[in-house]
Length: 496
Image 1 (cartoon, rainbow, N blue to C red):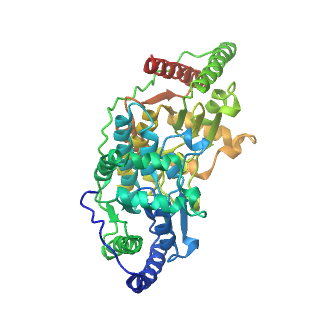
Image 2 (image 1 turned 135 degrees about the vertical axis):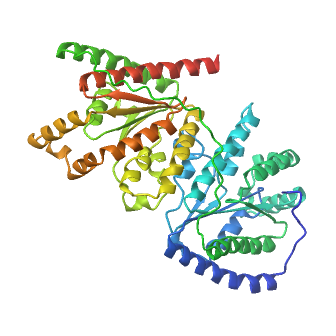
Image 3 (image 1 turned 120 degrees about the vertical axis):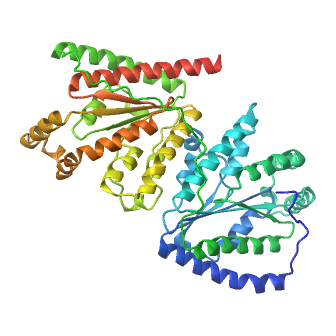
């Protein structure tokens, strides 16, 4: 893509002024239309050092109402970002419906910068390309417009701009020794960047490479590129973007349903077994922390299946500084304005920490499916999207445990009635619980399909029969201990 770019294009100031004025007006109009139709847009500007990225961003922003845009200037990761997957920091920055996010550099610069520092950088770059393509496809499928511009300059032009900046007291700070080192490797990076652009230019998120040896020409073409992309989308009656089918096909495994009645424990035996498992889990948490291994634990299940009580026992001996419990209800209005995965990915644990989700992204294929809170197309594609984000987290080095707590209709009814009678438990029972119970068969169908399509070899569903709460709690805590031990063994094998 870079080799085909014409670097000789130039325009004079008079032409630039005449052509940009109506384009600025048009951008403002398009922003208002996007806001009215609740369509989010992402504009990212990438390019070589000194290619004019900041100046191009500055010019584009002038045309927009600042109340509807969010600018992200991407540099080295913060401590919080460094200890989470690469795309976590960008999921946090995606725009709400009707909003525009502008990136002064983006996941592309960071993927290259952070991948090429490692010995096995080629594999890391390949993994980054796959992750980015997944990320952009998921956003595009959710109706986000993605506009990607790369500003290309020659090596001689870059050298000239570096020297001009260094000799100007006002701009000398902008050029660092690292910039000159990168300049010296221009010919080495050019084919790598070219390949990166080629393999991430997709129908729903294509790259536009602009020759930027002439700054005015580059800015003018950036205006035209953004307007063309927005106009093209506006003129298309079908506002659904081009779909690129998910390329990730996980190895699925059947869910082992333990529906046999467990041996009934007496209270003393229950307390001892649970306490022993909790003590081991506390030790395992410390080792996971030392090894920088993050863990996600998901709890799903029928109403009154005992998720809350199980989580309380699971965290009993854990250090509260190393875990977070995230209770999940229906999304609020702000959360509804974002991709449904956004609110969950934001709560990802940092390395060495644990996030426990009391309900999770599986609400998309359970409650939202059954209650009609999303379209059929949305919950249908959610299976592959969920498998992808879980695979991303596992590939990054994290662990994922997914518990399904099952309760029989008879036991659920007994617990509902018990809650209604007990003043200390009445807050646990709502009209919604009774309505959900009336749809038992519909939820069973949704649960079965969820198991079938999202129980993967790397993140299988663990079925817990929770009619007997005591046994369910012990099995859950013991399972987490066993899984943590396997994670540590895998990490040891990786480094040995």
